[in-house]
Image (cartoon, rainbow, N blue to C red; front, top):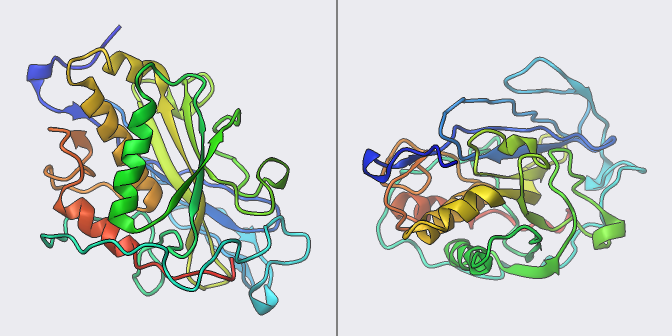
Length: 302
């Protein structure tokens, strides 16, 4: 049953921002998730911001702390489950996006470094991705590739499709899975799924997206992998509407922008506004925010 407001009632509301935390062994990581699309707006913020370094790592917006360890020579401690550093890392960015034609400051970032620079992916290595497409609605296959092409053009990030996977989404997804993906950070997982498999999609949530960042002590953070979960039944229902493919594509593009590092904004003209109005794609603020994310530093140490 479709419980959405009728089309004349205005834009489809979209959810509030949610953060989920991840901690793997002695390696201190933080998973930053945003953009659960839902008809309500429960603003949940539980960002676990932890680093490798002396003393206790701190948690922002919370009380729990976790122990951490010194990391000599920019490398993780022996026994920490991380890949060898520098996999596919080039000396310069692989792509250079054109500056947006119109300037705008109508953007926000999910996470920033101590110097205020946004946390993003290294532009000097490709971002591999896999798709769990078992439940993908008929006719939806091109929606993901179109959205990725748009994000790649806006950020200069080179995406590499590694094929399909049976991996299921999980808020505790290990960022390093050598048995499944080799000696590298796990690829971005895009999963067509259901609320039964991905509880974060329960209720009227239609999708979630975010990334996991890594840092040494108080050094800069960089995203190393991420996940995008799409409610296959809801999107299948959306695609039955005359303009459903436009809204479905907007949902995927919005969530991929969260994966890249964009937060929600208050400007209703932007795609990162928490409601879908006219699904016309990335607006000036979105493009300027993604362009700023393209300036992230190369990370041969990761």
